Structures are given as C-alpha cells and as structure tokens.
Length: 174
Image (cartoon, rainbow, N blue to C red; front, side, top):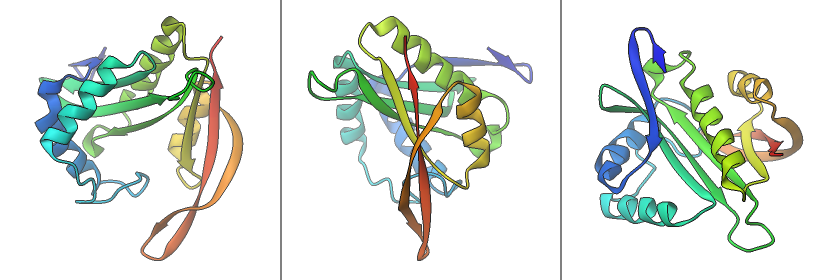
C-alpha cells in the first residue's frame, strides 16, 4: 500500500519488535483519549511485550499486526480470540495509529487485514470492538467496513473524573 509516496507495510509483529512497540505504545497513550490507557500508563516491560508477542504467535485465533513506513512502526492492531472451544470463534480487537499519520487510511488497512485474516483462519466467525460514543471518526470507519452497533456500555471510561460511554460493535465473518 502506498500513501503520500510512502510505502506502508502491514505485517505480523515479531518478538524483535518488542522494544519499539513499548516505545510506540507510550507515545500513542499521550496522543489520544480514545485509548484504554493514557500517557505513561501502558506499564509493560520489553520482556513482558516479548512474551505477549510469543503467546499471540502461538495461538491460531490471535493476531498482532503492525503498520510500518521506512522501518518505523506507525500503527498496530491486536486481536484476541476466545480462550475456550465455545468462544474460540469470536474475539475483540484494539487498534492505534500515530497521530501524525491519522487520516491516511492506515487504520482502515489494518482492519481490512484483520477481516481477511479472519476469513482465511477457518476459526474466527465474529469480530467485536468497543469504541467511545464520541469517537465519530472511529465509528464512521467501523460502519464503513460493515460493523454493526450491538449495544452500549455506560460509564465505560473515566478520564479526569468525566465518564464516557462505549458502543459495542460487531462484524460477522461468513
């Protein structure tokens, strides 16, 4: 994929990405209030990130991908499938993109990768997400890609003593 004359590579994360990913996550935590963590709150060591990536790579119903430009990680998506046989077919994802790359379709490409991977997996039959109700750009993108509204979680986030609701959305995989 090419955006603004730059080649964007989307690939699975590897254990070697752990150090860069920890730095990346600490940066994005301070760039958006739509994430489940803020600046400096991610709180995971490089060793813990390496272990997490290794676990994801071993599971057939988990996925961890990154978007890169010129070797720099600029976005990531993590999907976790259910742990038991009855729920292995469904999972939830979280996604982020560095602020300077917002509006370039990177999030859309990460989600399309997830959807195609899910179809090819033979396991994943449903993708879930939750998004703050005031994240209009995110909701627009999810609807554009076929996600449907399924419910509302009241007071799901609290930032500076203010509560925010989250919208539950889902996409069935045929």
